[in-house]
Length: 159
Image (tube, rainbow, N blue to C red; front, side):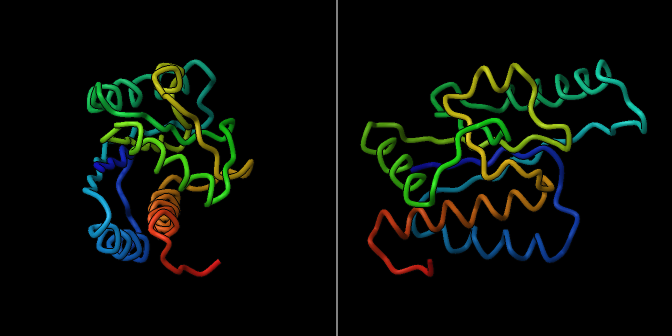
């Protein structure tokens, strides 16, 4: 299975980079992983809704340019469906069994994802109704993908 993380923004904190590196290393035995970092747009203070929509559209256009046609797109969105770790593992496993060989997880910038990206998504996944920093979300997502592969392969992992 090929898995891509398409992320708006760069990791700025050393501890997050170290965590991401650790999960990239762990995942290398289960899948081919690619992390695509796209530039984020600066949001001016007191930006109105029109400016926020424009920013999300610019970031969304960048995402859509790198999203592969044959990829199953799973967009992280607060309005998406919440799954348990076991349910996420089942979803990843069923995609592989169903002859999908490429999954792209998309993490938007600080304002979220554009309507165009959400419409392109095959599935919208929410980790919580809470808002998380998009940089931290990258590490959390990688941990859950790793946990999914441990579950799929009937290997122990702390609960």
